[in-house]
Amino acid sequence: MGVKPFDTKAAIKLRLRFYQSSPSIHITNQHFVNIKQFVSYWKDNVKEGSWLRRETEDLFKSVEFILDSTLHWRKIFDICLDSPVTETGLAELTSIHGKNPIWSEYSKKLNKNEIKDFIEFLKALGVMFNLESVELERNDAVENPNNPYKNNPKWGRVSYAQDYSIPELGKYLIAKKVSASIIIWNTIIHTHEDHAYARFALTSKNGQPTKLVDSLLVYLIKKYAWIPNKTGDFLTPQAITRETLHPNFPFNDSNKLLTAIEFGKEEKNQAETLRRQTEQASSLYQTKANVAKNNGFDSPEEMDESAKLAKLAKEMGKSLNDIRSFLSPPNPPDFSNDASLNANRPGEKIKEADNDDPERRTEIRERSVAVDISETKIAAKEYLKDRYIKDDVLHCQICKQPMPFKLADGSYYFEVVELLKNSHKRHKQNYIALCPTDAAKFLYANESIETISASINALIARTMEEINNSNDEANICQVNMAGNPETLTFSPIHLLDLKAIASKNS
Image 1 (cartoon, rainbow, N blue to C red):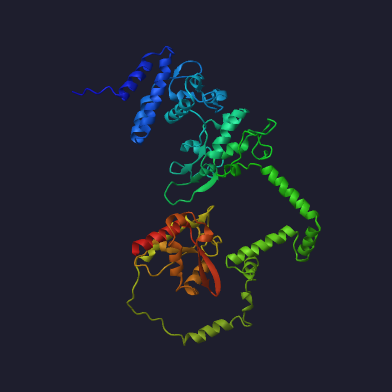
Image 2 (image 1 turned 90 degrees about the horizontal axis):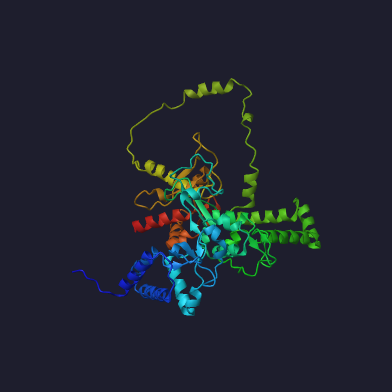
């Protein structure tokens, strides 16, 4: 007939119904007995699985059964934790978050273990006990001053925005209270490292390049003087140092958020300036300065930078002659020297030779034409633009230089070259983006044509996670072209697509 047993759940519902129907305050020892029963029931069901846990917690979330500091019954979401129940510092900040602290008597009526379980119970139900960095809604994300497309006319509803911040963060930053600063500090040193960056793209289509900038969280935290030093003065992250930091602020940069907010930057800059001044005053520096001057450099720093550039060029397979040729190309030939002493003589020679020139003849010959290449190359061109346009500039995969010129429509001209010839089907991903010079070398002066397939297979033999987390140095293929070693660089997505093609064809 549908009669249900009077079990623990039924008893819990009955007690909660009492709180719903009794808005007036009746504080007796029975209330603390109820609290212990609620916590015990929750603990038992936590062990039974996530579904039962959610069902159990939903019993309590809509009922006003917790007393706040003003002795009013409140729902869990309308209160915050603080001493003497547990130390959070939120009680001083009710003007910001709008939640009253929990009633202090709970700490007296419950023993140590009961208080511990009570706190975990409240946290599970959603009581406020700290600040949290959250992902912003799209409309809030685009307000980030660092949004690189903020004034771009192409920015619209199909654009992509992902950003992070703390709700009401600005109010906590200007509060000039140690309690507020501690809460912010604990949030940033424990939040996920991805929250340091915002990601923006003109379209949300998969594979579209995204630009990384400081998140709104980092932008605001860098902007304000909110971190107290040992004497109680509030400083910006750049001005504070680890030695002068307030003792209640544990230093932990494991997620690199303190690096992202430029913690201690001014001290580092001062140390670097002092190091340079000390170095410049030393006899060793004077010796280096003389060597640099004798070799045509303005300073030892300029000489060191030139050495680093030469090393980088060598790692990229470029010689110093290559750099010299790029910076100082040879003078163009003077075709005006090819002139005749008799201006009429060339025309006369052409007329004389015309009698001996063969007649133009045509004949029909059969040949095989790959009708699918044109369509595949068009698709490949769009695919490669998505992979190798960085900061609105399209780069060659071999020389890493911007493509040499643009067409009348403003798009870059580049060659779409098939990578591997042993595929049974034509895939747009099996092409590479090259400047005209490197394309010609790859097609007609490629000494690695027999080994390039094995090199690509070695790159895509890695796991998908390894490829996706790799950098340019790990995604290169060595090729010899026109007698010189070169490096062919791939984006991680390009390699993942090649891996998928290889897996499909195997």
